Image 1 (cartoon, rainbow, N blue to C red):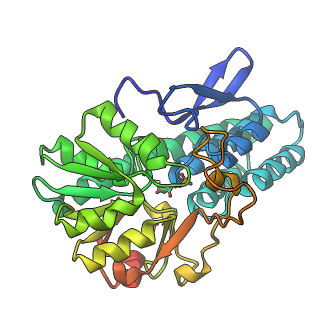
Image 2: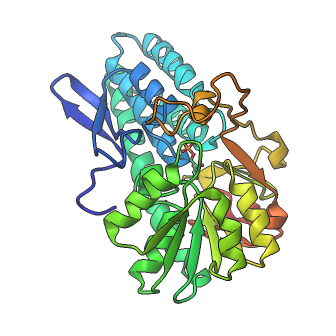
Length: 356
Ligand code: MRU
C-alpha cells in the first residue's frame, strides 16, 4: 500500500519482546492503530475478532504466531519445543475455518520444522522465524504477480465492481482483487471502482473504500443491494473479487454476498473474475459443497459493524450469520493467480498451475 500505511502484519521488536504486529482493522477507517501481540493467544483472538482478516493475511498472522510460540517456548529439548508448537498450532487452527490459507501457512511451518531435523532448539526457533517471514514476503510477491497477470482482462476506462476487502489489508500487501485494481490504475488504465459496502461487518465501506481513497484510486461506495441496479444501468464492466478457498473444480468461497453478485453479473453479461494466490486453492476438495462455512456472532447482524451499540432490529429476533458463501464455477469467467489466468474448465487449468 502507500508508504504512509504500515505493514498489515509483521514481526516486530517491542519493549515487551518480539511481537506479531498488525493494523487493528476493527478500528478503521476512523483510526489507524497498531496492535502488538506478544502472546500466541492474543494472535488467535486477533484473528477471531477480525483485527487481522482476509485469507492471506490470516495465514501470515498464523505463521508469525507459530514463530512467536517458538520464541516464547521455555523448553530445553526438541521434544518439549515441538510439544509447545503443537499446542500453538492447535489454537491457531481453531480460529477461523473457511480460509484455507490459514491451514496452508500452518503446514508451511510444519514443513520448516520437519526440514530442521538436525537443528537444536535455538536453530529450530530461527528456522521458524525465517519461514514465517518468507510466508509474508512470498504473499506480497504473489499479489504483485496476480496484478500483472490480470492486466489482460482489464479494459481502459473499466468500471470494476468488488465485494468485501481483498486489498493490502487482506494480504501481506498490495492485495488480490485490489492488487488487480492497483495494477490497472498504475498502468494508467483510467479505471473506476464500485465498492460494495459488505454487510454485516462493512469490509467494503470501512476497508476497501479507505484503501482506495488513501491511494487516490477513483471509487464509489454502494450498499450491497444496489449492485444489481448499477449493473442494469450498464455501469459495471467486470467484477473482481478475492477468495477464501477455491475447490479443485473452481468453485469459489468468498465473503457472504459474493454469490449474489455473481448471479447478478451473469444476468447482466458482466464477466466475474476471481483473483487469488494458489495458496487459496484447496486441491483436496472436489467441489465447493465441502468447504466449511464459518458462522459468526449474531450481534454482527443485530448491530452495525462494531460501532453502534443500539440494535438495528428487535434484539430478540432470530439471526443467521454465515460469513461466506460459495459461487459455483460456472459463474466464474476466470481465476487469476500468480501463475497466470485460469479459464474454464477450472479443474484442468488449476491442476496445471498446482504449487510445486
Ligand atoms: O471475514 P473476512 O473479512 O476475513 O473475509 C475476507 C474475504 O472474504 C476476502 O474477500 C477474502 O479473504 C480474500 S482476501 C485477499
